[in-house]
Length: 506
Image (cartoon, rainbow, N blue to C red):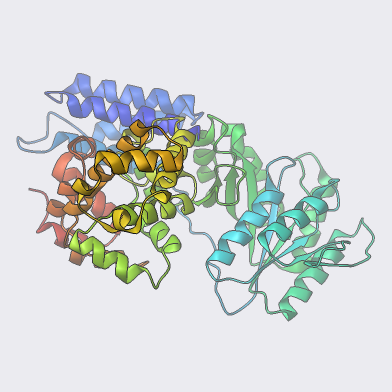
C-alpha cells in the first residue's frame, strides 16, 4: 500500500538516528525534519505537523537529560505518542453486541467505495460469528443493486433489494424512488430472521445535493440505526475534514471507514483530518479483495508505521487461520522447538490465509523492511507458493524429518524433476527451511496465549527470550532491549506487562 511509503520514510529516519554515535541536537533535528517532510507529503495538515515537532522538542530536551538515559528510546517514545495524538479522535465508536439485532447504516460520497465496504464489513463480522444481512436502499446510482447483490452472493450473505431472481435475494416489487420503504422492509424482515447485524446501504451523494441529504435523513429516521458509518475516499487528504463535518451535520455519524489506502499518498492526511472531527476511524480499506480490510486501532497502526510491529494483531491473525483443534499440537511443537518441512508447509498455508502478505509481515518488528521490500509483496507470495510446490514433490519421510542431512544430492535432484523447478530453487528452499528452523529453535519453551489473552503473554514470555528470536538488526531497529520492553508494554496495554521483563528499564 502507498501508506507504506510514509512508514518507510519514518522508519528510515529513526534508523539513521539509531545509527548515530552520539545523539545531539543536529541528529534530533535531522530525524524530526525527515519525519515532518514525510507527513507533509502524506497531506497531513501543516499545523498538526508543526505542533507535533514542537511538542517532541519540549519533551526531548537533550540538555536536561541526565547521563545514562536512553535518548534514542525517549525520542522514539515521544514520536510514537505524538503520532498517536494526531490520529486519535479521543472518542470510541459504538460497540456492536451479539444477542440483539444491530442496524448499521452506511453513508458516503459517490465513488468512495461505500457499497463494496458494506459487504466487506458484513463479511468481516460473519467470520467473527455474527449473522449479517445486507439491505440495498441505494436507488439513485445505476448498478448499485446489481453490485451489492453480486457481492452478497459471493460472500454468502442474505440480501434484500428491489428485485432479483437470485436465491439469496428477496424478490420485491417496489417503486424505485422509495428507498425509505425498501430500507424499512429489509430491516424488519431480517429482524424476524434473527439476523444480529443488518447493514443498510444508502445512495452516494455530494455535499451540494440537498435532496439526497434529505433522503439520507429520512432513511435514518425510519430505520433508527444503532450506528451510522461514513465511508470516505483517502485520496482527498485534508479535505476529509470538511466532508466528514458536512455528513455529521445531517446524520449522527458514529464511525468512519477510510478506503483506497493502497492507491494514494494522502492516506495519512485523510486519517488525521477525520480524527480532527472527533469521529473514530474503525476500518481502513487496503484493496478490492474481501480480506483487504483492516481494523483500525491507533496504537498498533502507529507501531506498524514506525516498523515496530503489532504483536496482538499478529496473534489474532494466527488464531483466525489455525483451526482450534490444531492449535494445541502446534503450540506443543513450538514449545519443543521441533521444526520440520511439513510444519513449514503448514505455516506457509496459514500465512497465505492471513490476507495480504505485506500486511502480515508489517505486524512483525522490522519484518516489513527486512523480508518485505516495498512493492515486492506479490514476488514474495509467489516464492512461498513455489516452495510449497517443491514440498508437494517430497515423501512423507522427507517432510516429517528434522534432520537436514537426509536431503542428499540425489533426493534434491528428484524433487527438482518432480516439481519442474531448477535444482538451485530447491536448494534455496532448503536454505530457507534451515534459517526458519534456527528461529523456531530459539522459541523453545515459549508459550503462546489464547486469542484475546495478551495478558497471558506477560506471564509466559520475557524480553530476554524474545530478543533471541529477533534478528540483531531488527532488535536494533526497535531500540534494543529497552525498545523491545517498551514495545511489548504498548501492545499489551496492561500495567503488569512490565512483569515479564523482570522490572522496568535498566
